[in-house]
Image (cartoon, rainbow, N blue to C red; front, side, top):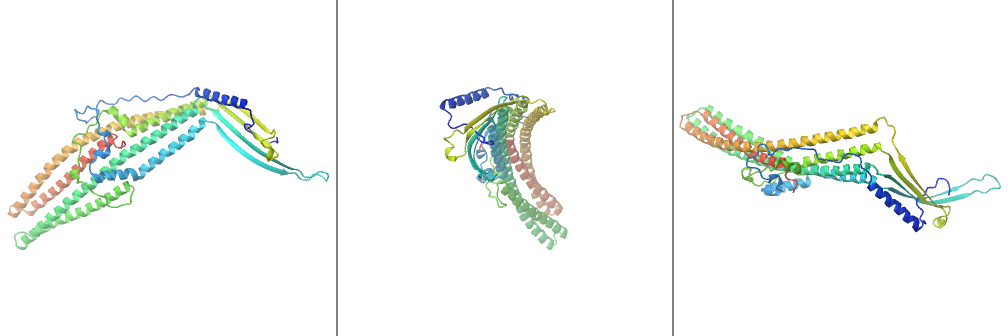
Length: 481
């Protein structure tokens, strides 16, 4: 065989040799399976959740949580449910999160492949013609055909690749929980966006109704001024009320179209109109909003689960870094067939093979391995701190949402009383003006107060619905389906 040829296992090896080779490979696999795995095994950090959420009703001690409810049963407005379903299907943030899962799965396949041997096959053919060196020697033409394969395998004796695979698997789970966190967030955004749109619709309706009342009041004031019963000052004050309502209508119309644009983009579509369903005050809410046990929040909140999987991944990377302290054991083999005649490639005696094992032990690398281990340990510490911070932030968000819902409901009830009082004050002011007992300035003031009170009530009603949605999001609801 000529210099430069390479070879793998010879096809004509006897059955006994094949049995011996198979037994050797099986032995190596058995040895590898029983190899030590360096690095710490994962243990969940100790977390002490509170016994109950601050702001939750004292009677809320059951395991039931509104966070376990499916969003399709929680929201009863059909256009809203269609909106949420569209968002969960077409939103680009969710598509990006899904693509990240595919990336993590591909990365897992790449990392896991390092645990197995690499086998390559190759075939080649070449020819060479020598020049005429003298008059008594003819030119020589030589051809050679080669067929072979090679095997290389770094035995994962210390668990470096197994730890890397463990880390990659945790990254898949982290990205999956990240996608679920996006789902939870998008449901909240869609619901709040829809409720905001319905609140703007209600404010616009109030503004238009107020404008009609003010236009009629202006007409009556003009009649009184023409009859000498009042002055031109009252007319100008009535005009101010009309113009104020008109400007409010224009601004609300702007906000409505912009809110529709926001919702359209949220659902992955170009800006356009949004179908409406129930009015703001008609939106059903559960009679009770149980928060459940704080300990269950650790399993339900996607961002907490995502943070924990990051700890698992960084913990496994410590083992990858520590494996560099130990020898690297590599097995290689090659073999094949070569012949100067293609027809004799499988019949001649041109077969050969080679096998080798190597051990490489790091001696000195200026502290690189030690620094890599320290880096991996520091990254794990960061992941643990972020995990604990995420849990505390989750407890705070739930508590804020519960407190906010209770206080905003009280605000809404007070605002309803304020509107009733302002309506009666507006009626009395108009009667006093018509009877000549008060100036039009009193009518102007009472009308402005009523308009502001009605808009304030709408905002309180919107705040109550938004707080309800925030409770659901803070408790980790929505990603279940």
